[in-house]
Length: 434
Image: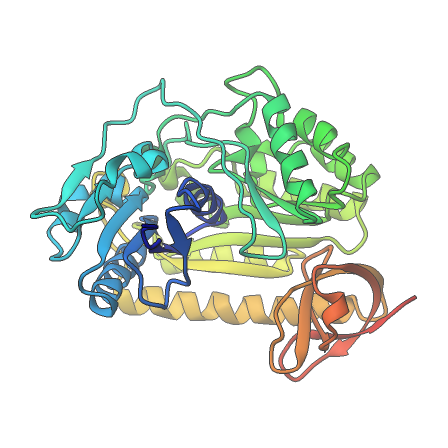
């Protein structure tokens, strides 16, 4: 008698790196025993890959766990990832949770699920992270038009507000040759764009004597992959050599996401960041000098302890001057066991909210200005595979979102287009060329 396959659903919170890892974890479930189903449907097993970068992220994780327990009360609930690494006891206290796995253990989840029966009490496997943690290769397939490829994990930076080193361990990476093999496997599936991801990808090579630029030089040789997008890179690791490589190789897209966090050197010092705002400005100037119409985004934290009104105005005026195309704005929240948790002079919640709203408005203004500058430009767009109310959308090389009347033949394809105007939805309308 053939036993019925168990239905397993995966839910990811947080960053692109988490998406890459969830996809890899999902492929470890044998297809002859498990059927993958959408996370919003009833399943026998739910695997929830968590994030813990902010207090809000923790809250979203708890809400997701409770949602799936409510959706399917008899299901086996496995919670893995960063939040599970940092707060396993807190997660295990949620009634209905069966298994909690830390950052290393999550890749062997099939070893911990036996019989698919709910446990009398949650089982926790979350070891302390060490300098000898292994690198678990990961890349996403099937979920999106592009693939997220993990090239690096962990972080050696000691930013005063961040728990990522505690959640993921020391910076480490594999040999370039193994990443090239994975990119080749991705190419065989027909994917045309790879998003290069990790915790601190500019640090690639520390554990193997290589460099991020050396990796990119090899990746662009992989046949079948037409575009490589860099997910995020620290300003002090964005080298002249890297910018010059992007200038001469059209496969590496002119899109930069550069964490700034504050435009005040005083606050950058309190954050223990490894650069000043002048270094950030110098990097931006070189990008603008070398590349036409680059898309440049930045992360900013508001309300860090000690941030006065004048410190925030320094940040605002600095960002206003920078030729950025968008901002990701985060409101500071204290993380347990960090230096920032103990810093004096806390910023009032209402002041954080006010500052956050001002920067979000600035981001929207900058995005409109950037889009208008690009009107009339001819560029390439990778179209998504989703029919969105009769429209197909996609991203240009420099990360402008465009829309066009739905044509199924465009899905997953890269086409040359002309940017016409900003639509009512805020996206760019286009015309196909050729």
